[in-house]
Amino acid sequence: MEQTWRWFGPDDPITLAEIRQTGATGIVTALHHIPPGEVWTRDEILGRKGLIAGAHLTWSVAESLPVSETIKTRSGDYRRHRRNYAESLRALGACGVDTVCYNFMPVLDWSRTDLALPAADGSVTTKFDAVVFAAFDICILGRKDAEQDYAPASVSAARAWFSGADGAARERLLRTVLLGLPGSGATMTLDEFRRALGAYGELGEKGLRENLREFLREMTPVAEEAGVRLAIHPDDPPWPLLGLPRIVSNARDVEEILGAADSPANGITLCTGSYGASPRNNLVAMAEEFAPRISFVHLRNVRQDGTGGFAEEDHLAGDVDMFGVVRAILMEQKRREREGRGDRRMPMRPDHGRTMLADEMLAGVRGRATYPGYSLVGRMRGLAELRGLERGIRLSLGI
Image 1: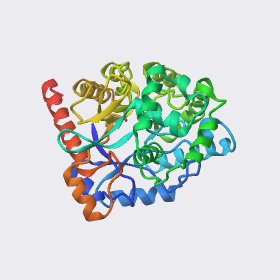
Image 2 (image 1 turned 90 degrees about the horizontal axis):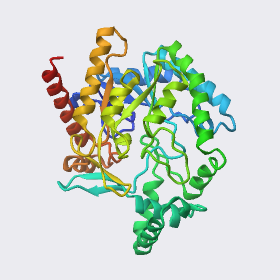
Image 3 (image 1 turned 60 degrees about the vertical axis):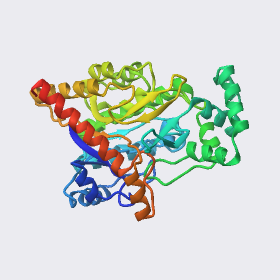
Image 4 (image 1 turned 180 degrees about the vertical axis):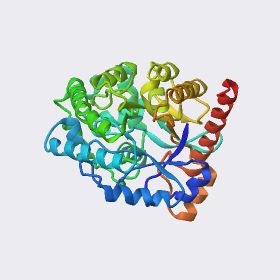
């Protein structure tokens, strides 16, 4: 596997020089300063590519070329946004960036209730608590008919949490849920969030699925022509939230997405943490079944709490069978090598990492902490563990 690292561009407190010392050779990045729906020009792409090459690294994956909410809802100026998306794909392909990770999640690209959960070893991780999230939905957001989406016991537990939480805890939860995307620096207000949710009020799951199918039918031929592989990222977490439909959550969803445009250019990002948050998903089986269409791999681990929540774990701990997943990926890579496929490198990145003591010291020196889950030392530990796992599997299989 090609070992890569997510970098949020020149404003990322982690430098390219530091990334090079992690052992990663590929960079996963995006042009975060360009608003969703606007064009990534060749000049902008080549400028970023040159910056990365100057550090003796390679721009391996564009994550993310964002799909605007306008495209997802097929409203307003969505036709122009889709034309711009196609133009950006062509520009990326012409500049040699051949893998594009994107998602089709409405409004929220990830959801957590705690971004600073102390782990047993003193490091810091993130958590999704189903009761606390319900408290946000019912008591803070005040979404109409929200209680109907939860079991009566969950509603009671959510109201009890809210009653026992002080103002600081409630405000912390609000900021956590509304936190902007990594690299964007943007955070919505509660009123903006309510309006964003309202845009999906009439669409529903059926409408969102049809909009994704239409997007893929239009973009897949463009990607084929440009020499680009599209890799859709799963929902995080993989179930409906806040009345929003989620349509990239399980194997059935993946089958439907791949069937919408039957082409190697229409593939998936296998994110073991996102899919792994649900006890219904068997990650090894999914890795084996969809191996030919896996274009990008996010390796992280989670531990389910049995009540609809989870916490992020060390990369080789948790409920995901990381050995089985990596073995399946390596077997697929070997098959691609035998067939002479051009996509045999299979980029992988250590997705998320705990904030460790050294990360806290670095934040103090720099005057700025990294985005939750995107620490330097925590991810470097994860990459080292995954590198060792890959090496051991290769030696055992003789590949």
